[in-house]
Length: 605
Image (cartoon, rainbow, N blue to C red; front, top):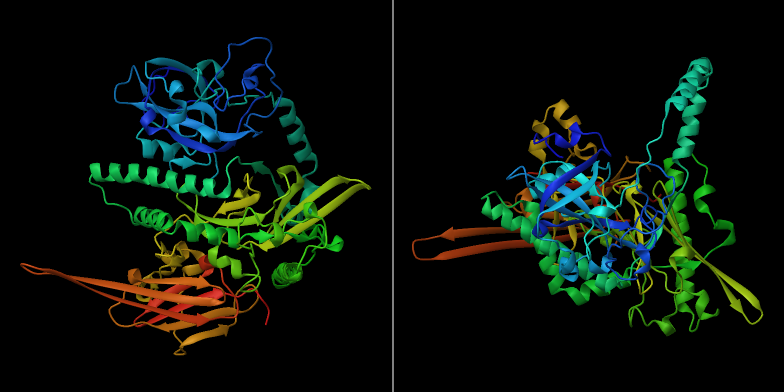
């Protein structure tokens, strides 16, 4: 039985320790981890034969289908969520822990759709102690035990419930694979090998470093999962979940009289604006989707063919590939009728039923980097994510390969179709540049029911104090104060964000200029005059296709004995630049009445 109450309880027990606890679930504070696939190889035979979306546990009969694997859970289809619920301990009044009750299908993520499984009485739960996952708020992608415990006010002890602890009509437990092996012989072999090869390793260290760099540059395949929702349903679920999640957090903050964080206010505004502009939001999402183009046989696997040590040449190769594919798309769009059978195309404006009258044209306007202006949006956990949509109608997840190497993402769709004369195959692809600000190791892919391939990953920075959304849902960056940067010590500057730790210089030249710097030795430098009275919190720097925009809004409220008045001053300035830049690569500082913005340029002159 659980008998520890210290804050470090989860660290006092080894991971995978079997544990039994008694108490009651607090379903009102249930959260989800996902999307995750059902782990079915540890379940008894017959569980998956019920065919229901919430597969009620079936009494054990026959042998388990258990297969030998590693200690970590590995996802398989179908896709759904793990249900994590605070559990009030019967023998520890006022204390609770976290219990992963198990897996539910994504269609029944709402607790109201599985009320039969929301057990209210005191129960006894058996499970395994789990530690946090080293991966990227109330809709979680991974086991962030400390964050969950803080948000839900529980002890940082996380238990994966066993299958036997499942309740009829509730989540399917047993979502843990435990296979702890005896490693003594491998340790002996490892240390013996290290001892005998120490000299040769020292002599070949340079070669090993080169080999390691080569391994890191190899493409990574990203699995594609099926989503039963269409694109609009998926986005509506996102908005509803954010609204529900942050309304609960806001209520909790108000009850505890703690300050309402600025980022929560930004999320509230984003949700309100999205609901207000829903039709326009969906139009933009569909219009910004990338269309796959016929694959050139000489470029089938570009990720493995580029061999250059120059960052400049590497970036130019990506952008050149994007340019060639865009030209191919323009030629395809200009044709009055497709010259190939419909099943071989992912774009056909004569049969554009899914997207309606809207033609998807991601990457067509603003050059190869024009898509960056709309690429960053909120994700399911209230964090900023890099979003890409691809029109993949006519293909299934098993037909699609998604590969990622540094800054370089490729989607390749292949399909073979039986015809009267034999078989006919089609092969389409699209290459997209991925900015350095994106966490490439966290990419996930979903194929919606209406044929849209959704690819997303979180950004690396988790400090959103400088991020804001305007009333049109455009993401902007608030500038820093130049004098504050000048007052930082060398050590404090080194501790700051690497891209924003130096003080930008005012040259006196209004508008954009190009300086030497960045990976391509070209650095965009823009100086914008700002009227007196505007402070950093009043300003926002945004990107559009080949443009830098600066907006300002300053409100002054005056309170008198019998009246209240307010004065609002606003301005917008726009400057044409040679290419669209990554908003998270921008550094902006306010020096008096001059706003300075710098960002690296990727294209050569």
